[in-house]
Picture 1: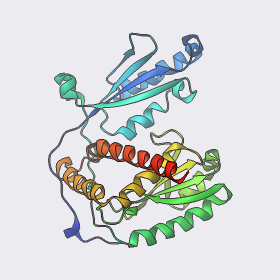
Picture 2: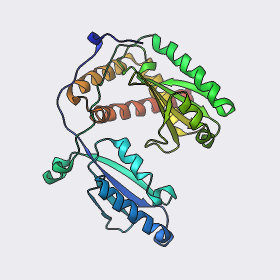
Picture 3: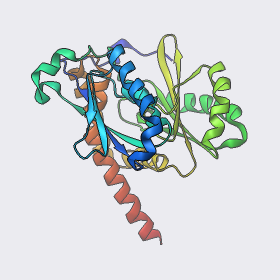
Picture 4: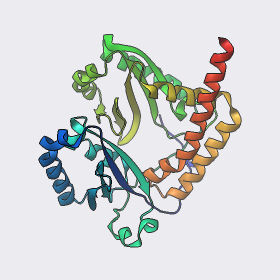
Length: 292
């Protein structure tokens, strides 16, 4: 599907976040002892690659902190997943974004240049629903018996608002572990596997066509709370034109400000998205009470 360049909204200024990971122990410290050498090696490798600037223990000795110059949250999440503590389920990581110049101006010199990608926003088109059905058919055949259902989510599923021309598809499956055995089959069809990609319990795939991302696939096991969160957000905006218009206008504004910094664009939507998720959740509770 092609898009008229006159439909696109361009971009503007630049500012980037760094990331601080707060590690919290989920088990008594003596249970961590066998994994400490591996964790130390993990930190050393992070320093050697320039992925970490500072690390240390928290004052309560209940965990630690790692400061990174990375500007893409997904990149940092991918690295943290390789921590032996994390792989063994012994710790949780909370990742916080912040402006390094406010934390301390000296840290600004460490920050990496953010990845630049062209951020395209185009008006809604009914072609997206047709494309969803095409991709859904391919995915249904590959996922087979473990598939429960597929949903079209994200902005391309909401009539009347601008969106990046990238489909977001959410397959619900019976067993998320089964997807790990289907990764090769999905990759053969052009869906690049990225693991959880920063979201526990998800399996994320993306398809690229002619050098541009075309489809995001977010696979969750039945009962995962993020399934309902995505569906409530979509359905709320489909039924509340004023909020949908505000979301559309915010995205246009952020593209103008972000200078093709996709991470800044995404974080700029965060507060609005969270507010809509709260409204959508409350509306769902109210409707369920009314129906009961």
